[in-house]
Image (cartoon, rainbow, N blue to C red; front, top):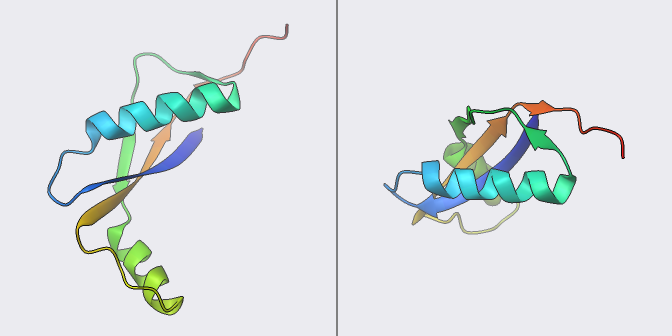
Length: 78
């Protein structure tokens, strides 16, 4: 399982940004993603805003935050 986070403007469909982000993360981590891509998107905007408030930061009201999960397959040994 590979997970990452993506931030998109409020009200925007996160699928395209999530796909780009998870593909970049897979390349960086040197893992293969299962095909076809089956992304699991979880909105974490509320938790992110709560964390920002606890840390004394101003929550970003103009963006939504999503956790992106995708299944992986083991890389072959080289």
